[in-house]
Amino acid sequence: MPHDTFTFIDNRDNTRYDYPILTGKRGPSVVDIRSFFKDTGMFTYDPGFTSTASCKSTITFIDGAKGELRYRGIPIEELATKHSYLETCYLLLNETLPNAEQLADFDLELRHRAFLHEGLLNLFHAFPDNAHPMATLSAATTALASFYDTHLEINDEAEYQEMARRIIAKIPTIAAYAYRHSLGIPFIYPDVDLSFTENFLTMMRAYPGGKMHRTIEGEAKIRDVEIRALDTIFTLHADHEQNASTTVVRGVASTGAHPYVAIASGIAALWGRAHGGANESVIAQLEMIGSVDNVETYIAKAKDPNDPFRLMGFGHRVYKNFDPRARILKELQDELREELGLDTELMAIARRIEEIALSDDYFISRKLYPNIDFYTGVILTALKIPKSMFTPIFVIGRTVGWVTQWIEFKKDTASKIARPRQLYIGD
Ligand code: CMC
Image 1: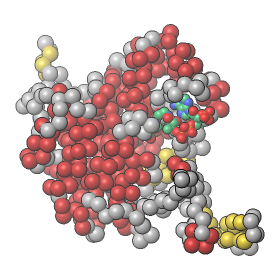
Image 2: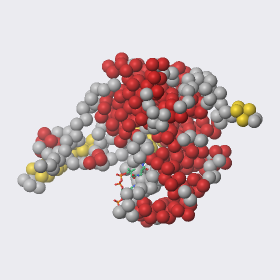
Image 3: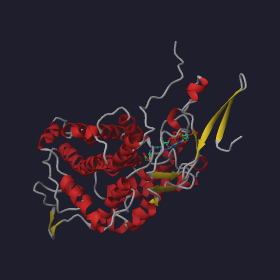
Image 4: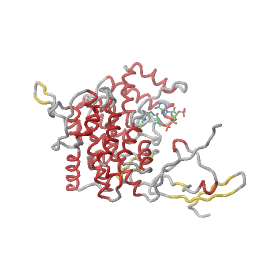
């Protein structure tokens, strides 16, 4: 028997079916079962796609057992400590890190593309004041498609890049406007003199006219430490292979819809607390726990099979070891503890949960480690970013991943409309 086939035997009549084994560069091999239904008249059953590779990809690689994450082959630790978020975006889109000139061009282009069409601003006013920024962000991203309908039919590299750069540049502006609308305060336009991350913080925080808070000593500037922390958070969120929201983006891409509509669908999928919404839920949960003395009670609830309570920021479908993104943020948190004023009661509760969970058999046996969202919440709180903006910040970081995956899907000649089958148990 050749080494590169996998045999299924139907025990009802001993029929053999051979399927090719495809081997990638890293990670488990896959059995190519594309003709399985045609050959056997049966489907495979895999809710939640726990054993299914839905595509071939060159973008991101995760080894969940080792706790390893790479973008375009480069370890996340290297990107998060030696490169900026914009360099990471360039890497994902172009398969290589930029040189100084390429980075300067990319940065300048993004700064100039950050503005929104004035007509789009009306949309924000249609939302109630207390609208969650994720609702406004998703709707405004869908609306953006109507301003750039030429992106619907694109198939050359220059067009892909223009479409991608435009959405990466505009999402922070949309997110900041969604937030300011939720407070009922006027929008701050992007400033081409500011870097990607500082611009976003300014659009969120500044007074009308772009002025920052004035203190007795003078104007309170956005600090370098804040820019660095947020830039790292963006980098850590930039892509994560075939997660739930990316699967949605590829699914919408498969129907031929506009790329920005696919991204808006990704935003909707990310909002749920099992996915990107967990960062907001982590802090809400720490606030609910309220004191270090109450931690044990909530750990007991999380372990109780009859209680739906789950510890937010713990567990991951793929990582069965420490989430490498969480490890980087934990180090950053320790490094910036003083500068960011992280020694709060919330931090103390988080530390106690972490201590107990990492030594408790329930969590150890299920390989439940803190994930990225456990640490982003604490850092973003120290940056004085309100909870409702945590998931929009995840969106800002992830937009490059979604759009890169959208382009890869379009270029892949094996791509087909996403149309799973079912085991019908009705009647
Ligand atoms: N607290 C308590 N128990 C948990 C938790 C948790 N956070 N997560 C999983 N478990 C238990 C679960 O009850 C099950 O136990 P048992 O085997 O006794 O039934 C076991 O661990 C396996 O859980 P699962 O639900 O089958 O695992 P999954 O791979 O389907 O779900 C998950 C992964 C992330 C949805 C889940 O761990 C979870 O709900 N975590 C909390 C939400 C969260 O932090 N999400 C952010 C994920 S990282 C950011 C991102 O990439 O989106």
